[in-house]
Length: 493
Image (tube, rainbow, N blue to C red; front, top):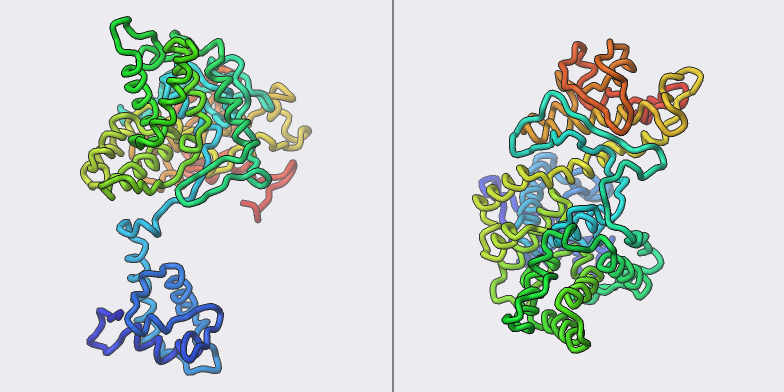
């Protein structure tokens, strides 16, 4: 039974349901709109059904129920029940309700996959080109641990339609599979997740190309000694395989690997050893299988039914969500250890880990992905102002445009607010901004220094004389994206 905290007013949600709702929604088998409230007047807790709770809240709050022909709810009573339902809804979707809080199943994006492989192997090069990265640090300015953005920095962009200006990357790696879920999706049955045969083949082709790449060598892989180097002749080979395999699987799958899963991979490794392969080649074969596994590719909360500690899965799932949100990649060993110890979910430990993650250079990946998606900055690449009116916009047509400088301004502002822990309101209204010489000229200011090109663009942090120039809304990138070739688009803005 749901009793209101406002008992002094002789009010209860149960009473309101009885008086105004169940006649059409549950009484005598009558259920309109597939909404049955009868059980909630007979002791069932409405918090057990958050989706229904939200529906009831909305129709009562907006005055849609009861219908006009029925006795209306008094305004005072309506305010009380809306207030109570809101409190119950907040409680029903609280952190303690794991069943409701489970995250949906998502597959890694190309950006996340590249980062995950790079971190898993401690790669010194990129896996494949990432044109999603619209701005690259050319002066080493990004140091989140310092809590301060420098006054001057050098960045670069890429030419339109080109994937050049990319960091060194692995040779011969297959492209990331296209999203074919509409035609060849994934199937879920309980906690068993599987890829369709065509998609599995694409990801296996990708993983094979990684381990077969000429760049897959000791010089480029920081974890070579840990996983791929030949062991000392005195070492028991099978024991060494088990040690390496358990470590690799735990990091790749973001949790301690269950015995059944471990045995499958160990059997595969043993089969490769029996064929006469050396340790390095055996681990490469196993790695290619790991990188094509749904347990690696999919991001979802896992109900670890073999675990004797229910909180273990909570901690491990939280570690994955944190790392893929802030780092776009796998949890590192410290974060995983905190999760395995069952302390990550505790406020003090969680705060400590988040602070550590925000101080790590891998935070640059968050800055590479979130603000560009939030502001839809990829749209600026296709902006084509009237060439006759804005001749200076196309300074090296057709590939190079002033937009390449424009897109850096909001990205640098976002990084400053994040790294310096400044007020989020500065994203809307700040007294400073970032200017390149070309951007200053475009804004009608006196340019300082050479105009530069996309390979190396010097930017300077400066105060704005007119606050209209502060924040992301009125900067050149957003203004250009919300304009046509020769006129603005007020509705779009």
